[in-house]
Image (tube, rainbow, N blue to C red):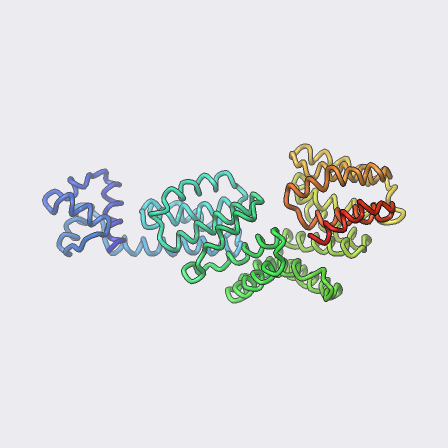
Length: 412
């Protein structure tokens, strides 16, 4: 009955009729209002008179509305499955139909349009729609409420606010919102907040869901988060970890997922760097940079360039290579152009390391790099540089400073 009332309202407004004009000779304005809101029972005779006056085929229109709702669900599913071509095809099909203006599907359409903007990285447009949807919370059904929280969580994550993201995501009821992809976003949020056990747990839950729904691309994403949160403890089997990374990289090749392959290669480079194998770290960073070559003006490219140069500078006999200085200067220039202050500071640090200005290098880490990582909540990198300062002061036999950084390592 609700769909029928909304259809009547939609076509009445489309024909620019008032409720009084539509009801004239049939029923009262009050009765028309209740019919449109789905708040009253009405006879088939009244229904027939109203649709005759509107000139619509009721059964055909109801079928069209149901078909349109299924189309919205398919569009959402294509975004979850990361099917880029299908996302665009379905978007076009959804938007060429004026049925999205009907109240029963309008909110869902705007929420999915928000999801589309987030997928494109257009946070400004997405937030504009999210602000509007928050004002219309009372109009949303249970599923739409959870979808709104999911989208707010994704938006906060893209802005780097993982604490706020988690607050939204944990409000979702998994029994009322069957798109359990949100467990993956919870895993990412916990990972970035340094809750490794919780991040591992939710990546397992997400992985199980992605496998059941044959979402092979997201399986790779969930496995990646799981791997990151498994390592670096006393039970850590480094060779097994590398083998699992290589299996995921092979899956990326099968699925033609170069961006996911770049993420995995970058992670593997970092694992080798953490283990002190700078030769292999250099090799994997080089492979990552080759995949990112088409988009150099991005923080992701710069992060991997920093990793590559850093690894090279810690390999004996490589420090003096002329092209490293050129890479540092090129990276600094890109960082300035895209206003990436974090990367710019890292390149200044690498410049000092390259020129063998060791005292200035460690002073720069202490006064610029560590405070910047603290402010940005980059705890994993922070741990690396706190450890660097601890080892530096230990080698300098500065027991007071070494103890200070040792305590920081323990606290972390």
